[in-house]
Image (tube, rainbow, N blue to C red; front, side):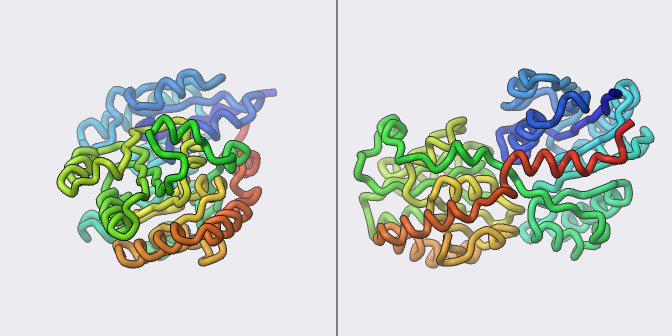
Length: 379
């Protein structure tokens, strides 16, 4: 059987939802059908993971990078065209915003028939300048004209794309993020608590998020102050890192929160970490569908999150979690305090959360649905 040459393109293999989702998907594709290639930046925390992935051929680009750089971006575009032609690529599937634009344009220029793009949250949002939003929308509209199918992870992202006149309804396919569900939902992890110096009977509020403006880590810290003023013995955990790390550390020091907030840095043991939490919080300002919330729900945690993107497709208050307006500190505080003070509510909401994570969030479903998109473009 002749194999299909399948190329994935992503800007940089950082430790984020888009990157971990892509590598996990690649490992589950049928290598008897595909020769699988990956084009990405040379550096990245997950590069070693990619290189170790069985059957995956990784090309580290000398020019592809996150920041907009017209000269480097142009060189990356031509480098990618050469790579596509050299490897005789049949299908190109891009991930992340910048790689999505450069990758789809290069694929079209190289004559590829099957061009797919997965949206991990649109690059335009209400918290940026209008000119920037307008430019990103214009670029996405153009790239959509070159695209065979656009994959989104929730109905909200499809609605946002169509509202911005990016493509037409038939262009879109919804394939949700996937998780390794059996890894979650374990009993409370006392080992992790001991590692973090948390007393066994302490209540723990935690978050797992990159320290960047989208995730609003300082909103989380303001929530810490508000909750701690009412319940001073609660412990707060922030798992993650990023460009706002110094701002987070300064805030903690300025407000005397050193004994209340634990910064874990990046973690590879998220299922075990979640098992040490009592309540999960996400304070994002904009989102598509956050993987961390899916994981927290699978771990039977009650979730308090801001009302962004596709999260309302998951959380239905009060059965399996609570939603609050973005930046509404009072609403976030009240919902978290309510859960901390009512053990029965925590348990019932957590149970409702776990039962909400169905087969559409499994890797079997994600891999099968993705491979179905490629039919008709294989040699």
